[in-house]
Length: 453
Image (tube, rainbow, N blue to C red):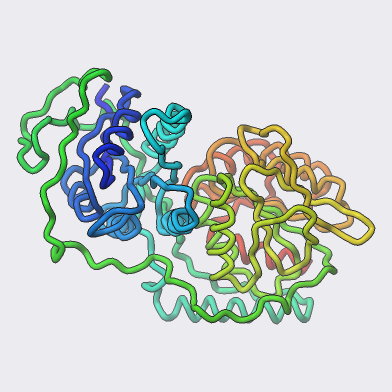
């Protein structure tokens, strides 16, 4: 079997060696090349069309965010970001996920760290999923959308807000038809390894390799790693990089006016791989006077969920926060479960509040979507709306089925064509508990219409 080809990008030779050694432990993968900065990464992707890329965030000349945007624009490829856990790193990682990165892992601190093997297992798992999912398609920049689409979005929000205020059914809003997820329905599957016309790398420098002479068998896993580095790249030849998601304005209006402790609806959303960009699409499309709280479980480690909440808040008309223990739940506010904690909706004499627990993982996750969904089971006085979006595995399907059997108002699964990974939505659909299958760009409008019933 011809292995999948991976490009490893990091400015540290020591770290390139660690990451490469971790990857080649699985004979499904080989290192086609390495690069020391973003400029070389772009050139390597052009030259070798790898099946996947591991990309460091902090590098000289061109950092990982800039390189990612150029790669996704010119040669869309599954990219796994390597992130530290500092506040700056978590913020940049969330940006990368919204800009089209497939996923991320925590960067190992050294080759002898206690968790190096765990990091390797996680990296290989994400690479296996990445190379078996659909090929990336260029992501449409928000800045590049036509003026007509921007106007239609603005008009749709006005219609939605007016309808909520008057409590009448709105005219169907005209939303953009172009999905903003990294994939489209006409994406193609990556060929099986045996179908790919690729071979093991040469040990000579990349720019001197003879492409016509290729070995037909991969090197043994215990072979000394000698992945080639790249020749310098002329910066003037690089594509112009425009942000896929523009930075938010520095001055934001107050978001407290729409928050109220009185509400009749509750929305719960679960997502995993591809979730940050999907959440950006949904949450930023909801109007500021959305008449329900929104509770979200995104599979993500501690610290990253806080950065996710802060970034979504900077773009959204709703107030988005990382949930806190005992926090009171109000309409017009979005609560994201903190990493390493399950989140539940609870009730007392004063109303509804957030309960965080450290109970064992469910479906391999904490927070778990099933835990959130199941906490809504006794809350029958509210109209409950559950959404499952892109992600690996089946977390959330069991909880949605139980909600469906208890008389849930709305159960939405993201349509396959807009999912980064059609795992969690597929499980819910196959469980027979979904009453709407909706492309990502239409989920927000479906939730708004559900509020009016």
